[in-house]
Structure formats: structure tokens, C-alpha cells
Image: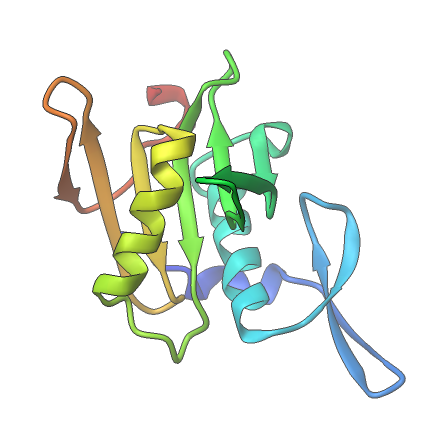
Length: 149
């Protein structure tokens, strides 16, 4: 089971000119602290600290194109062969992980084509594993450690 709350103390923040910032562990820069960014950084810390994924294999907020529209995913984790394995869609803690959020993640995954799709708002986590033979998803409880992929 995934618990993101234990990683919040490890996250660096600062306040400058009345603006709160958070250190982007993968992007290596200060980012404006929004509720969604807090969730995104908690996920990144979890992936690196608990599941042992390399920072070098984590991509954060990159633009993708879907039917000539530009979209931006939150996090994609790659394996050592640079194949996408986990797509993470982060929402603010006050945003429910409803059907619309699941459909958004499914659209992104049509482009990314990973093995897992993880939706989180920091409190609730929904994880799907793709069955490539049947081209369908099944809900699972967790994502694997990096050495199991």
C-alpha cells in the first residue's frame, strides 16, 4: 500500500518575497509550491526513496501531443531500457479521483503506453496495471520496486 505522507518531512521548501517554493528533486530547481506540486514531489520522493527508482529515469511535466492538442503529463518512470513503465497523474489534495481524472490518465497512457497508471491526490491512490494482450486495465494495490521491472 502506498503512503505518501511519510515523505513530506524530506521535502525542502522556502519562502521568498511572500511566495512559497518547493525544491524539485528531479528538475533540480525551485518551483512555486501549489497543492498539486506538493503531491507531485511527494510521489517523486516515494519513487526514489521507497521504490528505488533512479532520478535519471523519472520524467516530470513534459509535453505530449494527443490529436494535435498539447497535453502535459505529471510523471513518467522509465526502466533501464528507457521504456515507460509508470505514468503518474497527480491531482491537488482537494480534487477527487473521479471518472474524469481516470479518463485523463487513460488518454495520456495511450501516448505513453506504460505498464502502470497511478492516479493520486496525496491521500487516495488508484493504480491500474495494463494487460497488453487484452489491451485493458485491472486495478491493483501497488506499484513494483524498481528491481522487479
